[in-house]
Length: 182
Image 1 (cartoon, one colour):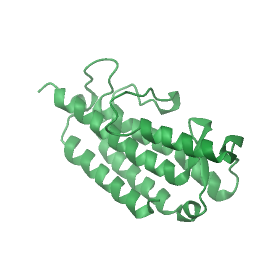
Image 2 (cartoon, rainbow, N blue to C red; image 1 turned 60 degrees about the vertical axis):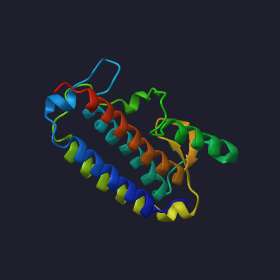
Image 3 (tube, rainbow, N blue to C red; image 1 turned 180 degrees about the vertical axis):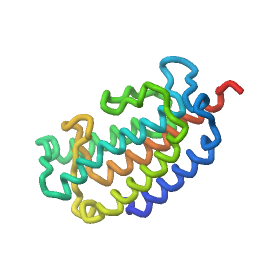
Image 4 (cartoon, rainbow, N blue to C red; image 1 turned 30 degrees about the vertical axis):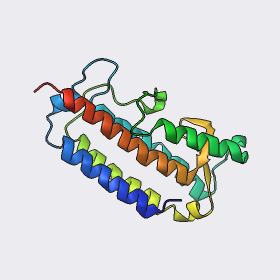
C-alpha cells in the first residue's frame, strides 16, 4: 500500500509537469481543440479539478461518521474488482479512450488562462485531503465512486486512481500540444 507521501509526491510532480509544459500558453492555445471529440488542454485541466473535487464530500462524510457505504461495499471481491477495473481504465499508457461520467465533464466554454493557478491551488487542497486521511487509510476504509454509488473501492485505491488519472490527462494534453498550430 502506498503512503500519503507517495501520493503527495506524485501530485507535486504532476503539478510541476502541467505548469512547466503548459504554463506559457495563451488562452487561445489552452482552448484549442483539434476536433469536437478531443478535449482542449484547458478542458483536460478543468476535468481534473472537477473530478477530484467530487471526492471531497465523500471523504468529509467518512470523517464525520455520516457516510453510508452501499451494500456493494460489503462484498470484498467486488471492492477489489472495481478498484482494479477503474485503475486500469485511467492508466496513462492505456490507448483506449474512456467516456467520462456526466458529472465529470469539463467546462465547455472557454477556459481562462488562470486555469493552471487554479489547478495548483486545487492540488494543494488535494494533498491536504490525502494527508488528513491517514487514519482512514489505516482502517482500510471503503468508499464508492462519486459518480456511481455502486462502484466501490478502498480509499487507497481511490488515491491511486486519482494520481494515475492526473497522469493520463497530462499525457492527453501533451498530445494536443504536439499538434497545436504554431
